[in-house]
Length: 390
Image (cartoon, rainbow, N blue to C red; front, side, top):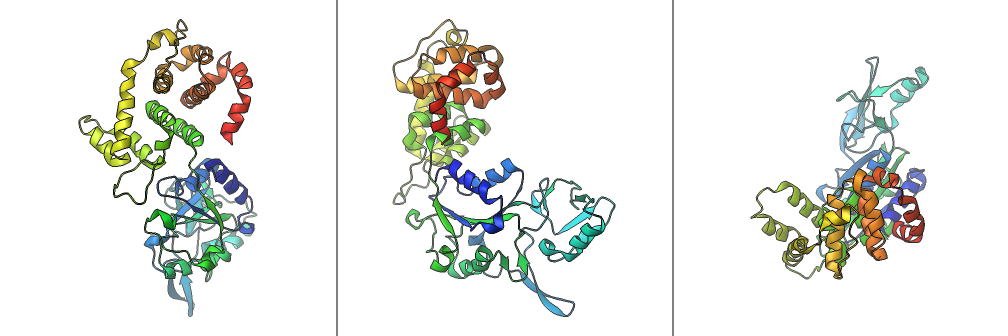
């Protein structure tokens, strides 16, 4: 499944989480399996709990026993979801405060009788706040992601049987508005993966994460990655993801490692060590090709003439076209020069027209919308934009 298709399914699942079976998202390392559900939660402004099962013992999910009122009870881990998640602290709350100073707490917050009674007494007109930061930005919705589920030993897998099928572990219940899912690498990736037990596998709907150039480009633009890097990946699309489990090289190009490369370009001030760091992030071959692409800027035509509308020059070489598009968008003043870029856009082939406009939207969507030529451009390229969204 492509990233947008996964996001669409998760949005549907969150409409009624307790009625939708868990999704197991699989794929090779570095493609964004773990980041995808987190991104969905950030966009919807709901809670996200990521439990790395490979780092847990079999008893960690159920918790520890304690004697409460002469009865042995299991106290669940503090990071399992409850009815309250603080968006400011980004954590599950076992205790909440009321603004009048009262405290509501309990070892089983997701099914807290005391909380329900307090809500009824106050006719639901209370305001709960986080006891740590005193923020009232709390939510009772979210995603519980059981990550690295294909890397944990059989006994730890078995500990996830009940929470994935029955949405509970012992006396702990997953809140109704939280969706349970899992993520992990595939056996063929040779990334510390163990066979998934058939009993656990049968509790999931399985989907494989598909790397998609157009959707990665849209994400990279919105995330503010370097325009030259985005242009290079569009020029050498096979280097967006190039993974060989048989290779002994530790560094290889993936969507994640290209994001790390962008971090290096922004944060490393010593340019002498940057090439070695790049090679150690995306691999020597990909790193060398990207640096060669960066040097194409010296062969570009005069950008000033294109930006002020006096030149319509388009280079013949595709690598120069990619470099030119990224350089123009990076240099342009959105309020003064985006209109000229949309007019210049007509001189390019469809592939470069869409790439340039997507980069412009990523830089300043409001400015693009205010350009007089934008409506006509969008109408003319409507079919291409629809295909790209899908």
